[in-house]
Amino acid sequence: MTISDQAYIAANKRAALKKATFPAAVSVRYDKRTDKIIIELTTGLELGFSPAQAQAFEHVHAADLVGAEISPSGLGIHFPRADLDIYIPGLLDGFLGSKRWMAAQHGSKGGAASTPAKAAAARENGKKGGRPRKNNTLTEVSR
Picture 1 (cartoon, rainbow, N blue to C red):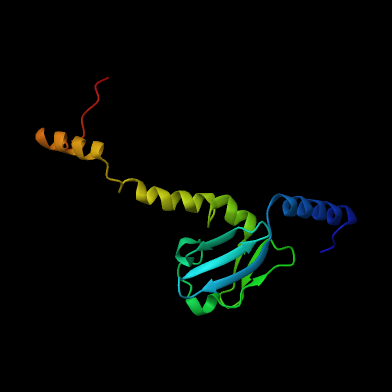
Picture 2 (cartoon, helix red, strand yellow):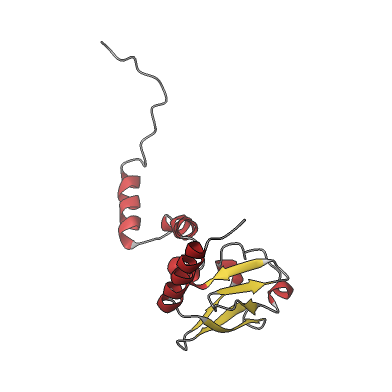
């Protein structure tokens, strides 16, 4: 596949814009004691998170997280033993996964929240005999 000069210049401009917009990684390590991947950015910010919280890292063994490499741009991190990558802009954008994946993670916890209002509503519903049963019989629609 041949890349034209225009496509090459456009790609370099996009990369420069992305690099100016997001901080780059300067170091990465896996802390076995705390079970966290720790990424230090050029801003001095350190991101630490459990692999279980990151998309595609949920089932990776600790030994496979050692020896991570930072890409030349600083925007990517490669874990050669696990053959997995982290893209820093994507990480910061979705907070450890794509927006869709993160929404699914947060949504699964939504119904589990217990509040005083939910408890009071459940008690009131119980006083009335509980949740009404669904009518499973089909009714004929008159014309």
